[in-house]
Image 1 (cartoon, helix red, strand yellow):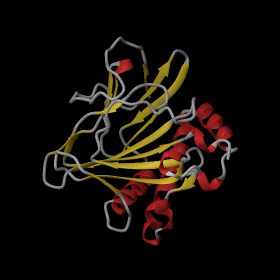
Image 2: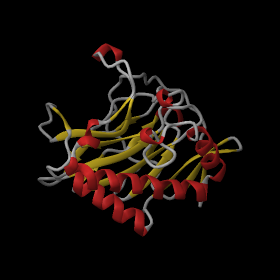
Image 3: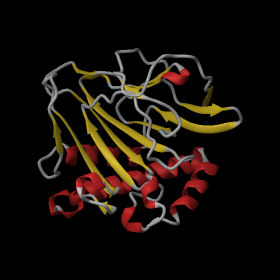
Image 4: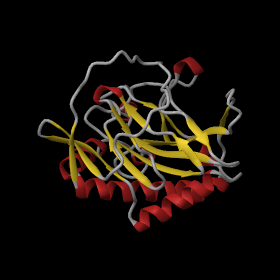
Length: 248
């Protein structure tokens, strides 16, 4: 697999800035390196089993069986998100304790949750094959996390973002030296690619692709999502590890 050395460049982008439309600069299968360290990778096409699970999870998410949090945006495009797995404490919302997403209490969401857990495990196997040291390190970290706060074995939580273009941000709540797994499902749409300005990189988020990346490490954002036909969309299925569940 091709290796791409991540070299930092100067830029003026700050957390909270809107990510504009940009062409992808990374479109092929590749491994990302920083110095001598492998820090992530990109696959344009999931293996068959993982692809089937991604299709099932995407289908269930888009159904009425799975509760979502709707977002109202001026674009008029349908936008929503869904979190499963661990949800960290939010004292400002009068919930000073960690919990499991309320989606797990919905019987109709059972197939979605199962598909996502299996998809996380398939993604983890790919990580083990390409980044064995990262896999072992993250497994060791998560040996201390209660199973009820896990999605798969390497992640505490998952969020599915439907047609959501995130402004530039950094996942500061993630456990340092871990990776996220981002699987993209899309149809009849453009944009929705991940931009990492530190490396002047825009990573293609094509249908059935997998991006494994340390989201705690850099500021990143998502380029605008534009449906090209009625019903077009871009959905990202994201698995991530939160610090909040290390000491519970």
